[in-house]
Image (cartoon, rainbow, N blue to C red; front, side, top):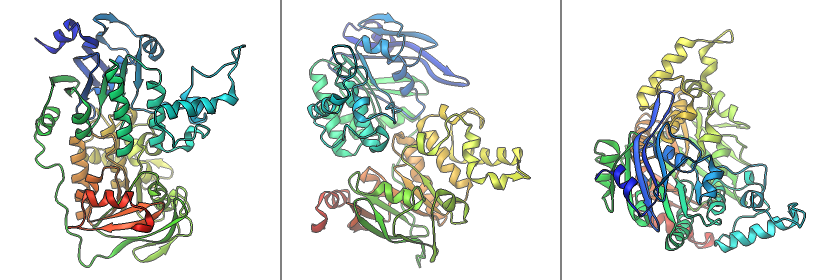
Amino acid sequence: MSLAERAEGDPAATIAARELSKAFGGVQALRSASFAARRGEVHALVGENGAGKSTLIKILGGRLHADSGNVLLDGNAVRLGGPADAARRGIGTVFQELTLLPWMSVAENLLIGREPRSALGLIRRNALAGEAEAVLAGLGIHHIDPRALASEVSLAERQIVEVARVIVRQPRILLLDEPTSSLVEREVEWLFARIRELRARGTAIVFTSHRWNEITSVADRITIFRNGAEVGTFDAIDEDEAVTLMTGRRVEALYPPLPPVPSPAAPALQLEEAGVGDGGTVSLSVAAGEILGVGGLAGQGHRELFLGLFGAPPLARATIRIGGEPIVITCPADAIHAGLGIALVPEDRKTEGLLLPLSVRTNLTLPILAQLSRLGVIRGGAEARMSREIIDSLGIRTPNAAQPVGALSGGNQQKVLIGRWLLAQSRILLLYDVTRGVDIATKHEVYELMMRLARQGRAILFYSSDTEELTHLCHRVLVLSRGRIVAEFAPPALTAEAVVAAAIREPHAA
């Protein structure tokens, strides 16, 4: 029996898709895709970026309409009029793109549509924060200030609020599109505890993630997608077989071997006594051809360090040397245009890195427009040639360079961001959680690219929320806690266990 027949005929299917197809211009996102999730199960969708998972979630959650095929609820075909209609039918969705309104408080975002009101129907604003605090506490969340603006809390905290806003409504169907992509381990554990509670109550949960250990720890069944269609549903499958089904090829080794650091190792970037995080200071040095990892628990100064080195905003009380020469960075333009060769690939590519409505070509060539211009006019032929070389070199999947970058999958968007700085010939790369929300095969491509750049003599400062990445991809790893370096590891002492132990240890005991 085909999966489509099971989706249509399975009496236990709470939500199902039957032969769904969806195209965006020249990109066919779904190709007669079928899927079914049952009451009281966690059903994982896995596949490469661009395999169709997010498009399927958006159709099941009412954000998109399929070009053909049907959505079924309890065996009955329905046409969802939008997310609000889906919510009325008991479907709650946490979409991959965060939807919090940045100019509103955490409390206002959390309680939107269910605010405390007076007898006259007016919102009781003085009661918002207290009620939001009680809601968060009921979900085991005590570290997020409900009075803070959504734009002022971290990306991980915004993700938690997104999840909390949906699950507090106790939907009978919960769709989670990469909800862990910006969360660290303890926050993932919090989320999985909530998922198990909902499963025990009979909720049908559809879950996507690119972290295989998460899939195997929480999923009851796994459906694998490739090129917009399902290729199989499994009660259990090992990672190697799953990757082969996802990609159509075998990935022999996820982590490529590290190239040796050139000797003597000349410092490419030196940072001395930089004010970071909660009153701490950081000093570090990265050699040409070295990948220096930065790890530790979230919120310990990593983001301030990376943004500060890029001048967004500049670091306090810092001495920065490039190639041994002291320099001043007051804004990103200094880092990009003053011949310093510093590039930042941020964690939130959609809001901090890319101009989503603009083309792939424009996003790639933004830092080098001056080089491509003559008398203020961009040389279109040179721009097209250079962008095509990067697209081909990095394997960016796009119908053409004129495609809006917002229409690409997350992994391909990340490649555009990295390709931008390769075009700019940046010598110092600040890579901040660059594999967040990226599929296994694309991660492997990013890892290979990092090794290639290191062999070319680029200096790489690399932060990852995945400790295994740090231990396999870095020559050394620094652990930050409260804005201070509390430990440094190099092989053979560089292990995931050592990094985690240093991160959770009190700074005075390090």
